[in-house]
Structures are given as structure tokens and as C-alpha cells.
Image (cartoon, rainbow, N blue to C red; front, side, top):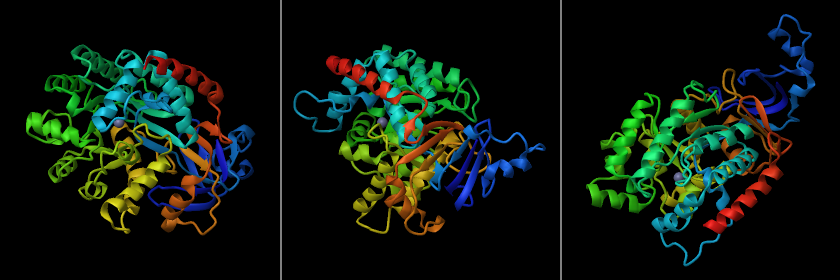
Length: 462
Ligand SMILES: [Zn+2]
């Protein structure tokens, strides 16, 4: 496939902006070449083959029409099962704090999910993600009354829409030891089947990988965490945990009360945290915790809009990054639009510090550089850059810069222009998922209609 006539933001080591370039994508889904004049009339391809006759068929040429081409976005922490909650109303008085939000909304919703809900919430959520330029999602799933096989249903949705995914099941003791054991078994089974990534080993086939899901310190006993650590060990050295860490102050207070230590210290002591682990949130961490996270090589997913919505606080992004922690960006299921998370991450650090100079490098790093680095280091997916050898996870946006655009002023264009520009095309692993603003892999109207029926029945059981 050739994409012609694009303004390319490479985000590679050279960090270039090419004003009129072509991108050649191989049949294996990797980017072959990036440059000027590669696809002009097919002639530029003569150098790739001794016989210039077999030109790329017209169906495999995308004329970008001068649109902006850049790497597809990555969501480093989300919950696709929450998709069918959009517009739901909660009976009784509104939840007053984070534990009440969990009890009154999320833990009631996930207990009501049946296998069809799991599949359709993922399917409709992935269509939404695709239409917002997100090529890779790191999902954290929970459906306590439909645990076994739930990750296969989500995997099916990923494959049908054509997005890249990392899946896990949320182990917790909140529904008793039998459910916790079932959750551990689901993680171990799925890890065994698709593998933990590392460049596509296992049945994941290069676009699906697994992690091991844990809910949070305050819903997990020592006994269950030890069993999970044991099960993870059986899954091989590449597997790691994906867990919520110190999202709300109540998690930290619970750990201090119960074990006399912080959440990070407790999880570290039990062997949960290491350089294969992904910790979501880390809002209520001490300076000592930050040093521990850095030393252990734990990856962190920052979720600024969800944290704002739940009123749990603002993560100390500047301190985490300065300590050397690799912090990426997630949505926590709050929105499919990662550009909104990017903007909120930027704004919140200014508000938190009262310093208008901060936030630029941090928001850029978490959204574009660190997310891809986390996905590469933990699961082996080489995405997030437009360069030969990288996977072809790319998006074309309707953005024609009204002022000069170069690598040195990219941030301003991202914040004030590209983030709000409509997505025209999304390509994941060399396959077109969205074209002309429409999802082409599934019938998006039919999917939304089916999801609505599913949601109506789910809400009646809620
Ligand atoms: Zn979460």
C-alpha cells in the first residue's frame, strides 16, 4: 500500500515534518519507506523490484490530499466494559466519594454484564476508539458473573474492528475467593494462549497481547496477591501485572491502616511491582513511593480526566517524570478521545503547580513518546513512529496548518489544531480501519443499534 501526498509528522528519532511525502507499507503490515516521490505514478517503486511493471494496484493507493499523517494514538489504560454505561442513571443520592462511585456504579454495572454485553461493549467502544485515531488500547476488563472466556470475546471484537490490544481480567476479592480464583485462571489461560507479546509471539499473531489484571490493593488480600504472583511466574518472564495503584486517598489510607505501609510499598513487598508492571493512576504516592517506582522500573498510566471526574486528585506528573518513571496516558474508560486526555494532562499540571511554564514537555511525553515506549517495552509492539521497520499504525487527519509547522513548534499545532481536526483515515498493522471518516471493517450503525439494545437490557438488570 502507498499513501501519497501527505504532510508527515514522523515522531521518529529524526523527528521530521515532511511537507509532501509518501509512505510505503509492506504486505506484512510494516512501514517500508518514508520519503518524497516514492509512489508518484508507481514509478518510484522501480527500485524496490527488478521489474517495474507490477505497479501497486490503484486500490492500494491512498491519496492523502495534503492531509497530515502521523502515528495512530495509544490508550494505555482503559475499561471497554464501561462503554454501555453512557447515559445510565443511578438510583438514590449521588455517590459522595470514590468508594461510593465504585459501589454504586461500576461494581453494580460489571456484575450485571453477561457475555453478549462484554462482546458488544468492546465492539462499540473499539469503533469509537478507531474513529478517534486510537490504534492500540490497553484494556482492563471486569465481569464477575461472566469471567471464563470473557477475554476471548474482547479479543474477537479487537480482531473484527482491526485494532491492536493488550487484554487482562481484573482479579479482586470483592466477590469472594472463588471469583478471585476464577479471575486468576482467566488471566493465566489467556496469557498462555496469546502470549505477553514481545513482537507477536504466541497466538496473538502480532496485534493482541495479554497482561495479568489485578484490581487494587484495597480489594486484594495477601493470599490472593500471592496466588496471582505464583500464576504470573508460571506465565513466563515477559508477563506482568496491570493494576490500579493509589487512585484515591482511601486506597493509601486502607494500606496504612491494615499493613502499616503505602500501597506501593505493600505491592512491592509482595512481588507485584517490577519492570513488567503497569500501574494505573499513582495519584496518592509519597516521595519514597515515586523513588521506588523509578527504581523498580514500573510503568505508570496517567488518567487525568477520570481522576478529575472522580475528584480523587491530580497525579504529580512532573515529579514522577523527573524521577525517571515512564508515565504514559490512558483514559480509564472516560472517553475514546485521547487528545482530550492530552489537553487535560497539560492543563492540570499548570493548575496544580500554579506555573504557566510547565506541562508542555510532560503532556507531549506521556501522550506520544512514553505511551509508545510502554507498549514497545512491555508487549513488543513497535508503533508510534513513522519510520521504516515500524508497524504501520497511522492516521490521516483533516489538518492543513494555517501557520508554519515544523518539528520545533509541533506542540502548538497539536494542542490548538491537530487535536481538534477530524480523523479521515486510520490504518492499523497495515490494514485500513477507518476511511473517509467511516469505520470500514464493521457496519458501525448496526453495531451501535445492537449495543443500544444490549444496554437497555443491561440497565434493566442494573
Ligand atoms: Zn481503571
